[in-house]
Length: 451
Image 1: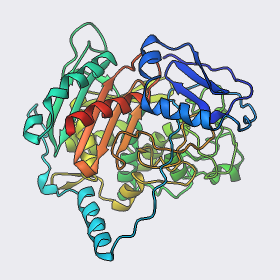
Image 2: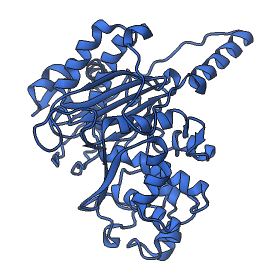
Image 3: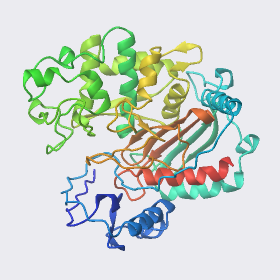
């Protein structure tokens, strides 16, 4: 895996620094300096509306003093980008009580489509009903533009479900091993998108009485699972592991290292948000120890077999990575769309846990739930930086969208308001780190179809 390192710059305002996969736009004194980036991004990202908005914002604030320089730590596996948006100041509009009530109830209905409208594919076999985009009133003339974007971005598998049925399904490139064409049966890795599988399984373990997410993690991991003192360690709960707020130091040499000596106390749990793989990875042991089951077996029994997923967990260094075909990823997205229910069977029946999982979990990073990224929440934080930024993650996507996101652009996007699931598997556009800007480009193209 490629790891990028950025040197610190003097006298810059962090709000004017944009990370875009393999390059950096640095705005200083109203001038734009491009630090090595591919020709593709010099052309496309520079002209992207988000980038142009930031340029305008930077120019308007050119008289402001630069912030004290902050050395930037090496970037890890999570997707990294940084951009700002103008906040829209809406004028006050007086609505009648009647209209307000109508709007509130209309929004509520839109956010919770009826289960009767949702199709579920059989657990066994390849049968999956489909809908043509034209039957949905979508603009099929714009499909080729979307496909061009996906193919040029090293996409392997792409699916859009509408009401549970396949509306768009397209495959590109070659398989993970060998030169055979990628197809609906080809296996690919979820990377950090698989964190959401663990989140769901944690909820199931709680509903079965094996764990309580408010209990100290040491209840299930034993003592001395960190290098912290006993009192510091006992303050860390399973909830902190789910929300990336353990307070353990993510500035160690290897953020994936789950050894106690690499899990050092930095701040009180719940007071600091940091995207730290190691504490998350230990949730596997929490579930396994509490349930007295092998993690993989427990997952297959409680989730995979219940919804027809075909995949496997593989140990890669300290990480446990899930591999599956694209349709299996879509099945999980459909389960989340239906709030943990598959047809008439409650898979994740702890509704309180589910709502907490897909809602803002803490005030430090409102765009993060229980290992899910949340669109439409501001401000947001990103991995490795301890700053909050105004704006939302994917401005051209629905505000109620929740996202499972992994390295190289593995995405499970769930949109309750549209009863829609979007799946993308593949490499990133330049074989480097994942970019939410690319996902925003996908939604820009998809919006032309959905009109």
